[in-house]
Length: 349
Ligand code: PEP
Ligand code: MN
Picture 1: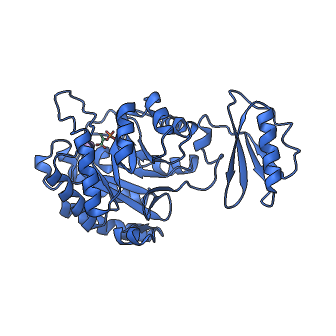
Picture 2 (picture 1 turned 180 degrees about the horizontal axis):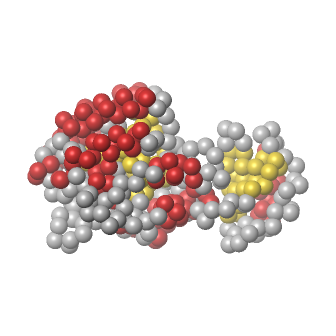
Picture 3 (picture 1 turned 45 degrees about the vertical axis):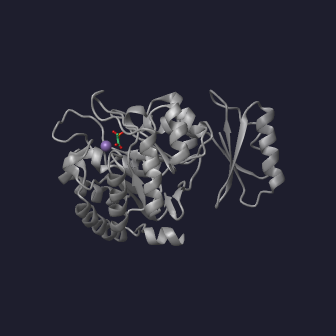
């Protein structure tokens, strides 16, 4: 249930609604917004009797949220959530944020060179996995804590905020110490104890869509994070499994406008895992921005042929620089802007 207050409702009226909700045995979540103050009710399992609330002073409307993922729904909150990754790097606003870097952190030289190259081309955040969820136990598993230290070094060198994956609860604590944003990968989208754990943290979370997850399931997973207290969630479309083996995954462009209608959380796209094929990454990245994605996360490697993971889908730095130019044009055509590191430094956004 969501109680929408009149825009001129007094603070005492908002508090009276909160107290009534508490007296009913539920928890009120006041949400002051630009256009209205709303008070959400959580802690119910079934429908809630609103008769004690509808007539209270200052109440404009009582809405019953029909979705199973209520706190992430647009019914619950009308304005798109803004998630800040670093000074001036905000996901969900007019800026299209580009997060780029290698699949895995491999060495100091590799991650620093990657960070410098993507920054020079205009990326505003650095990606790179230190804990890698690999399909084979014999594949490179990532450098672990050392990888996090190298990411912190690359951030120090370039100023780029870092986005890196956590695979379990203990790893998430460690990642939170180093990273600006904790990535939860496709394989862990439904790891509910991990979702709850990052929900208790104060760091932004990048939640990727599962390999065969529906959009509703993605949003319900995000709900776990919000329900545990962390509203800073960015969703990511990264392709799903289908019958067709022509590409690694089926990149679901539909998910972008669909999620934007259903949820206030920002959504970005990962054309690297969405296609698995280097020459398909650029067209699908362009398409994602044209479709309205709030950003992209893309794999770029200084020497993709030598990459320890996902080399076949990693862009060469020159290809990435060309892609950035195209994205600036596309973003401009839909009245958006590709965030630039210079703007981020100046805090212009
Ligand atoms: C990655 O970002 O390198 C990754 C493993 O992605 P996903 O979880 O989408 O497969
Ligand atoms: Mn990868």
